[in-house]
Length: 110
Image (cartoon, rainbow, N blue to C red; front, side, top):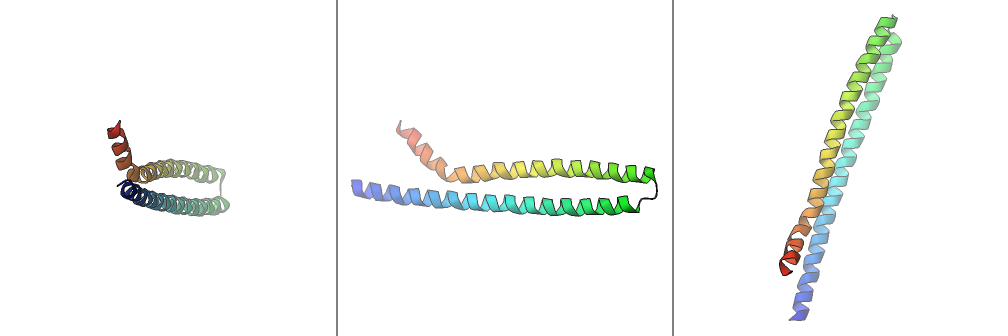
């Protein structure tokens, strides 16, 4: 009987570890894709701002372009930081989920 229990425990542990690893991999990939997309957008926005700055005909226009760029960059950064924060939270929840059942069983034994 003990051998069957040990075998069952080993199989369940492997399944939990595999599920958790899959969640970690999926979450890391989503975060990497999101960060790469944001970086690309940021470079494109910076290039567009430089083009506008170089074509500005007056100091007022330079200040206007710079102000618009700073404002939009800040808003984009805050939005991206929020989105990445949510992805990290979801990532942790998904990776932890397979262990919930094991922890529930363990706490019921005490």
